[in-house]
Image 1 (cartoon, helix red, strand yellow):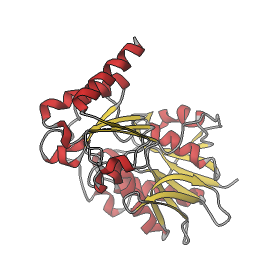
Image 2 (cartoon, helix red, strand yellow):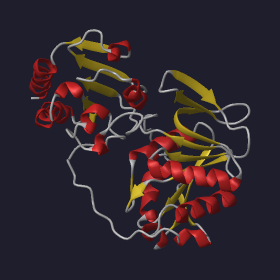
Image 3 (cartoon, rainbow, N blue to C red):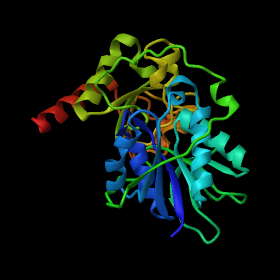
Length: 320
């Protein structure tokens, strides 16, 4: 069976969930070959093998931590040349999309970004995407070269499928451009104890209707009762009520959770573009004519300051 390269997103050997989702999708079109780079790369093998990787190509070098993006592109290109895969899959993060785009240019192939599903086709892998601010769903395939595809988090359920997971050292020669942009400092992001926004199974977002930074605790309390991430609309972020890193929308982060709860969000098209692929959408808004209600699976017309605290208490009581 043909092999599929899967770029591994990990932190010191701890594999992140989007990579495990990629392995599930990769098995639909071939045999997954994982590429793990940097510190702790060899420690990823057990988790990758458990989820279907037949091989794990690893390489560690200081360049991956000291310089931006290009060393990883060099390594992924080396893996591509060693394996000759039918496709290359990369998590659809900001860094992942840059790596994928640079690789596609180097190998002369087409690229598909932000895919939400993947299936085998007669002429190569077929990817599902949301287009035009999620107003349309498209199916497309790359017509030139080996498809390079980035996949949004939460696009597939993680499925265990034990495989050999044989670890092999990857030979990498860094290009002259690999050391072009040096990382001079890193500051760890302060942990909130909540899931990463783009990877969360549940997201609770607040918008203009929250009416102030001091009121976002209502949104946070609901999120915490559900073990969810907290999001915010552009209006809330622009007003300074919540950090930009939590913005959901066309100019923020794109999310695709199992459950998305929008509170006090009218449903402007730029916000819809960032969350419309969510599996189940619930909206709470006192304006019965708000555009968000055209999109939802369940809608509550009411004041979020009445509805959300009651919902939070009900969830806590059922858990308790």
